[in-house]
Image (cartoon, rainbow, N blue to C red; front, side, top):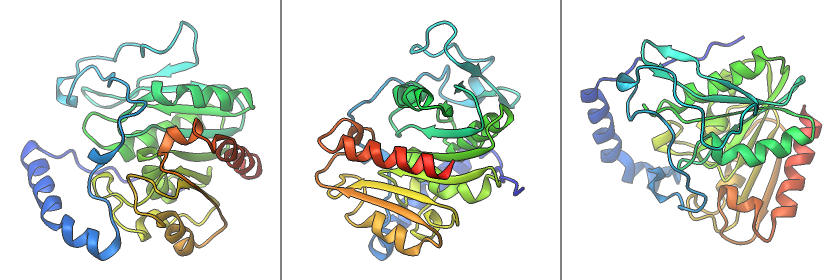
Length: 271
């Protein structure tokens, strides 16, 4: 099993230098390879309040409160610690060996993806949803959710999500071990701010990919999913629908039936 490498925790000074350096090269990179530079362009629809108990891991002193969207007895709520005062929130739903890890948009948390997760549970899947980390180590958050799902009995896992969740799943999947058998990307692509800046970085996974996008996606350039499919060495299912819906909006828009059917077919075949 390949080991997920965790980056050393940056100081405020190094974080500042990293942001300055990224901003300095962003224009050249975007022109050269069609790379997006910031999640700030993510559309605000379906935005939900962040539910972390603090704005930085240094300020966290204990496990966070139960998410506002959960009733008593909903799933298995975990708060694993990465360090002395750093916490993540993971919710496991359902049971069984067929697993799905679902990452939210940049403007969301586990509550944002909970309705979709419940739909998957009703179809027999074992599902993990989670919050993004307050220190922006989003790959670590998805890796923790994947490990928690595997430890709870999931043997064949699809990682994926919507927008940021799709970006992280595409880039991180090759490093998550043999239990990950597929990637589901809804409105995903290369993104500098998320740590995967090129087409190559989001097409390394050799297993099956599901790539879903709107033709006029407001965040990613037109044709980005086709470029990922062309670079990917493995089977991929590509669905590009008309319009400009992004991420979770695709589950409710005029082409929601096609999108949901593509997800259902992919999960049934891969897991």
